Length: 401
Ligand SMILES: NC(=O)C1=CN([C@@H]2O[C@H](COP(=O)(O)OP(=O)(O)OC[C@H]3O[C@@H](n4cnc5c(N)ncnc54)[C@H](O)[C@@H]3O)[C@@H](O)[C@H]2O)C=CC1
Image (tube, rainbow, N blue to C red; front, side):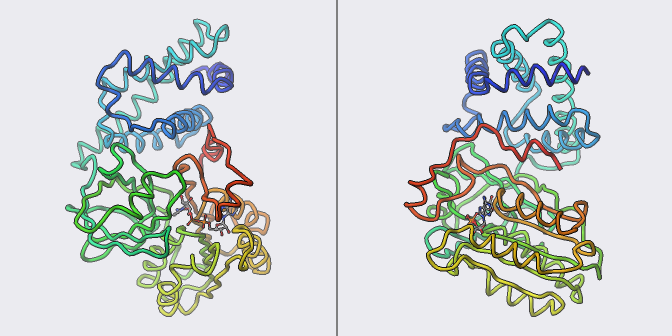
C-alpha cells in the first residue's frame, strides 16, 4: 500500500472535510435508495464520526493492531445491518467524494491506492463480522429496563436485564440504542461486575443537545426495551492480584471504576492503592455511598472525593485532583485506571506520565464524543460565555491506543 500517497491525498481531502462528507452522503443515498433509512435522522454527529474513523484508519494503516481493531469494528457494525453490498456501496461513494474534494491531487495512482486501501479495510471488517456471526454471537442484545433511578435533574442510573447472556468484563462499555431515538447508538460504560441475575447498570449524564442521554434520563421507564451491542473497550487486561493500583474517575466515569472495584472486592480484597472520585460539585457525587460500601470491603485502598468549591467552575475539581496526584508517590509501581470526560482523561493521563506512571500500565478508553458537544456547560452563563465549537474531528482518534 502506498502510505505516503494515501496520507497526502487525505490531507487535501481533510481540509475540505465538510464538503467531502456532504458529497459522500448525498452520493450514497442518491445511488442507493433504501440506505438512508439505516442512518439516524440527525446526521450531524454521523458526519463527525465518519471523518474521525477515517482519520483513525489512515493514521494507523501501518499499525500491527489495525486488523484487530477493524475486526472488532466489523463485528460491531452488524448492529447497523451492514451487508457486503453496503460496504461496496460505501466504498464507491467514498472514492467519489474523495475525487471531488481532492481536485487535482486525485490522480490515477491516488485512486488506485485508495481503492486498494478501502478494499483491505472493508475485507478486515467483513471478516470480523463473519467470525462473530459464525460463533453464534447476536448482532445485538435486547435488554429490558428493570430499574431507573434519578440523581438530580441530569443523572440517572438505569438497570437492564438482557434477554440472553451478555458477556463483558468489568470496566468495558457497550453501544446502547432506544426506539425513542431510532437508529442512534451511543456508548456507555457498564457500571457493575457481572451479576448472578445477569442485570447491568448504565450511568447516564444528560448532555446538552444529546437526544439519547435526554431520552435515557427523562423518558425511558421500566418495562421498555433497549438494545445493546457487544461489549468493547480497553479494559481487557486485569491488574495482577496484590499489585498496587490507583483508580481515578470523574462524573459518570464512576461507572467503569465501580465495576472494577466490585471485581477487586471479590478477587483481591487485600489490594493496596488509592481511589480518587471527582465531580463538579457535591450534588454530583452520586456514587459516594456505593464507593464507601466498596471501600469498606477493600481496606487497603484510600479514598479521596474531590469537587469544585461552591460557585467555582467545574474544572476547578480537576486542578484540585492534579494537586492531590502530585502529592502521591510510587507512581511507577501502580496500575492506573482512568475514566471520565475525554478532556479530563487526556489531561490526567499526561500529568500521570510526567509523574512517572508507566503509560503501558495506565488504562483508559477515549470514548467517542457524545452528541455535538463533549462536555455540558455547568450553567447558562458558562454556556453563553463559551459556546463550544462544532468539531469535525475527535482529536483523540488521531492517537489510537
Ligand atoms: N470509560 C470512560 O472513560 C467513561 C467516560 N465517560 C465520559 O464522562 C463524561 C461524563 O460526563 P459528566 O458526568 O457530565 O461529567 P462532568 O461534565 O460533570 O465532569 C466531571 C468533572 O470532570 C472534569 N472535567 C470535565 N471536562 C473536563 C475537561 N475538558 N478537562 C479537564 N477536566 C474536565 C471536571 O473536574 C468536572 O468537574 C462523558 O463525557 C462520558 O462520555 C463516562 C463513563 C465512562
